[in-house]
Image 1 (cartoon, helix red, strand yellow):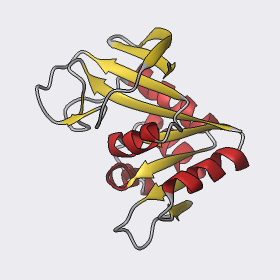
Image 2: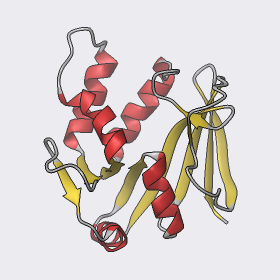
Image 3: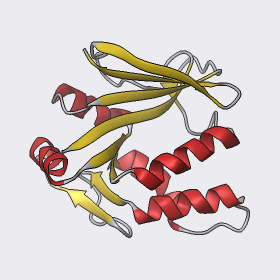
Length: 176
């Protein structure tokens, strides 16, 4: 059975903003390694549209960018959307019954499946389907934006914590 993991870069004050801070080289390497070993990712529409950046090669990429793109392209992606009519390579739309679709994915696969996007994570948290939360805490204070937890914070128990790179702490939690 697959393990569903919600991982997100987050500011010290709990917000997500992909334009305001980015991973340093060490954290980026960590994300490459994770993408290479994951079975796939389940995306909300907004996060999927952000990640589509990796579908096309870019001349200004460092080797790490190409490595992440290769790992991301290889993964199966399941996209939860009511508005998209189609999705890109190696991606599939998830039907209207989110709970049944995700339970089926968990049952049909072994390994880790990433959950990407705070709104999707809220829905899956409400359904009790997320097995682990990995928060990558960056030394940035945003003061506003999209909260990492888009709804009530679930009761969590600290599983582990470690420093990745110069300034990021990864906090891993399981539902309490």
